[in-house]
Length: 440
Image 1: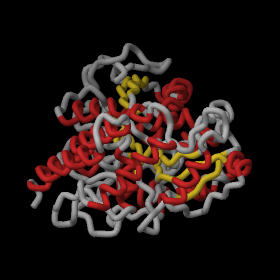
Image 2 (image 1 turned 30 degrees about the vertical axis):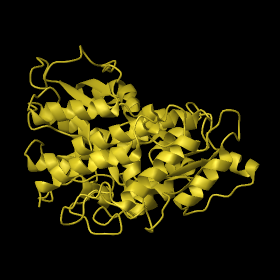
Image 3 (image 1 turned 45 degrees about the vertical axis):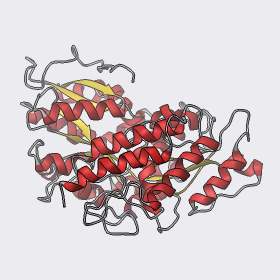
């Protein structure tokens, strides 16, 4: 895994230093994932937020797996190095229950300009604790859908259904291999990690009729539906997926799709904005979008938000809350649109985004489908059977982070032929049974 890289904004001082240890009270430390939307806010902070408030922002940007490790270590151990961090719907309710996070809904509700009621309801629900309070402000929200090259489909005489099945997708992938020199049929994440390979894989498991655990905590990792879904996923990637799939996560698949190296990609709806940015993508205007593929369920998209959370350890809650409110505001969306292009707006969190004429003009191909996918998810019932916790692409228990990562490490090895799917899932079943024993 690549070494962690610290990146600071032009307005930042030296990186590092704890959230409470910086002698400059008008400086905060922010830890975030290295997705395109976060790279954009890094570019815009100095000349907007810092200029207006005098608050400097020291950014640390890490790849997703490293970010998850770093933020968990910092917040769980109360290290206090960061004042704000990007986390998601998996972490929020668990960490709120542990009293590791500041409640932030009161800040948002007290700021009339923020327009709290404009936030999309499933996103708010997913970022709330068991007490119903909001513990993170969404930066952008997402579900998942299928992205495909309209021009390549037309050239090959193929049609993408509006609501495709996974069997149809596999058939299309086989026909699309080599449609252009070196082009592969589909990109699917193979990089280990519960939030990397584990996210799309679990949605496939759900729609194939599988689950990690039954409602009464019976482990199901080597049950037939889970096995069938995993074999399907692994075989599809082996036959028609991207080269080096075991090292391909969200970022690598985004690059493959935007550089015209794959014909289809199943992943986060938030990727569409980057694909439609002509300054960064060779396929802008050439991509079509369809609902997440299904098998036994009516829908199968995931639900996620990268959100700003404030650890209880910060001594700069006032400055941190000002940053979070700005970063999740309508004003910030307008800033991105005017400075970087409307396709790059961190969308999926506000109803008003989808009625903004500037945004809808550039997002007509993917915006309505994104909103439909987000609002159409049911985290309490994402499969064919009752679940012990909420969550579409994760199980909302602390142990799932290790369990999901361990299983996907073995399945990533299966992509390269170093292990069989059966070996990986049998080992996963044994680990899942140990987890389940704690909850029975």
